[in-house]
Length: 295
Image (cartoon, rainbow, N blue to C red; front, side, top):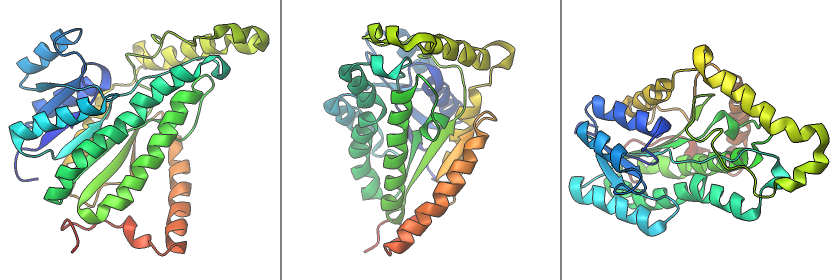
């Protein structure tokens, strides 16, 4: 990218999304911070980011019209979007049986279908240019699961499949897709979720009913105080990926020392994936073609 890259980040009002967009602005990128209610509850966040030269844009990833409108607004100002960072996400924490279908649907509307909506909104513009980069913010929980996080992990497992499929289908169009898998970092939603709507079902679980509290305490010990990892590592990883030469970026990037054991799963999966693609005669899709669309 020889021009000043244009980057749109979803879920940028707080947490990792805000750190990422601030890091982009500080390093000379033209950064757009997608967030809900920029004239309501996120007004102060929007003002703060604007003061840093970052451009807030109204964006609710659970709404297709909102996704399309946000992308159109950025395109109207810049004429292109070089990078999309799918960061918006929410969590659920509690005994699996206690969550209602409506709660699970809400989670997937953000963590999975929100990515579907954003990619569909952005990709026509990237395809027209024959270039682009999409970063999908997953988690170590997208490859291995923990108790009381079944639906969060399920949404990230689904995201992993979606993002990797996009990678192989888009590589020969000059568009890179990378999955970012952070480890344990302070999160604005961990510990603040309302919990399952049907917690009465936990009564029959005996000692296991106390598991959500135990998991919260362990996670807090790993992400707060002297033992906390610096979430700036995630922002730095995104910057590194953006600066890499197209076609040299990895399928997945693990971020933080508390997630590196997941590399064993990634390595094994990569071997199996290559075998599957070879068996179907489409192994060429796994290789990036730097000149954009093939004619």
